[in-house]
Length: 551
Ligand code: FBP
Image 1 (cartoon, helix red, strand yellow):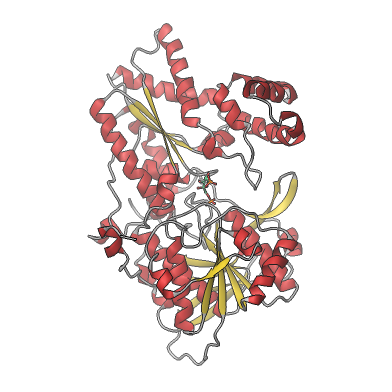
Image 2 (image 1 turned 180 degrees about the horizontal axis):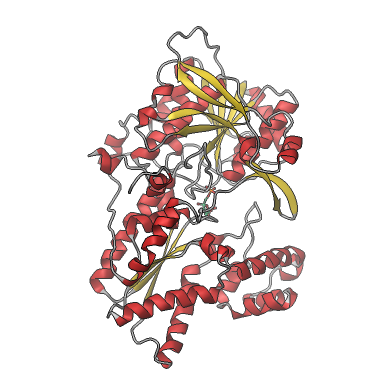
């Protein structure tokens, strides 16, 4: 296949490796750990993998060990995130640095390939084609939930057949939760298989003191910010449209917040704030209309509104409706099967409690139908399919008409809608993500070589130069708590939502009024791979602010 000029040059990029991982590596054990909450319950559920210490790698000047060869398997799980291919090449190079005989196998199309024994060996020549590229197409990804003992046993058969001693699961919070359960299961039955997780998701919600960011967030946000900047330039040129821009991020609003810091739109909604202030849909519409009316007084009938994808689930009244809808869709599945749209709406309406039925009825038909679509394999509403941007702009248009009648608004309102999500998930990784993912992968190989299981690859100190990044691992159980999922209490990794006391949010909140009533757009431009480090290697604003750096 012919490659573009950029692809050819970018393929030669050698990710920078932290000092900790250069040459031979020795391990330093830290203190024993506790889970973030529900310690007794998590300890009971993970008797073999609870309480393990945090570990850190250091350069070993006098290596003594001769490493025996071993084989490793990998799974890419869930939504794509830029840098996945570099995790794979980092693992591969790490393994080869330990022993040239080590082999790497990739299970195809996510956990399903593991369960159904579909795999391929990843060789140097094959991996070379994918270095520094975006996407997960090297082996494909999938959302099959790996949670049942039968699946663990089916997977174990192929691991034994291929003489694989460790499995690396590259995934988000749900997939890493499953990695912890699998590690515990294999340890309990003495399967002789280690399980290591790698923190992936553009959503940025898999993070804590030890995992400073999930990979892919940086690149995806920079792609969206470039396009938002372009839209803002267009918006400020024609001065005739309000652009309602929905941004991916199933639950947390990290992506919307980061893009707001990068581009300085007129409005950015933050779901976590909506929830904390118990705002209704009506409150949100009122706020947007207030800004539009004030801007109209200044003669500006244009602007940009950023909307986090998960917003709808954070509006308390909508959350209660969605939760009841989840039950209705399961309980009355037979009755709803095969109904045409209007009949389905009526049938669902009939089974809802009075308050939720009223809210359901008040929604535009398209949105009510989107809310009633099938749930994903984890029981989540597929928020990427709900057109919140249209919902809000329709409601805003209606309200502005009412305000015009009472003389509260005199302006022209015309809206454009956008949804940015898939556009950024497979972009070629930024230098930051290319280096970070390579280090995460290389580091995972060292965790395996140290005989660890139930650990997540951890690379920290990310706002410093790459060579000073701190490498090691943390027990996955340390990040867990108990949560209700599909009606049952389950151990899961705690999701990191936007912290309303954190610097990224406070920075945005401090600018919000000024951005709303002025036109102070920022245009970040495209990702740069070659050039000055302050342009090419700059991490996300969220990460910089969280590390007390200025932006
Ligand atoms: P992960 O949590 O698996 O990384 O996926 C995140 C995400 O990109 C969300 O932002 C989005 O809501 C969802 O995937 C879309 O899922 P799908 O790719 O199945 O349409």
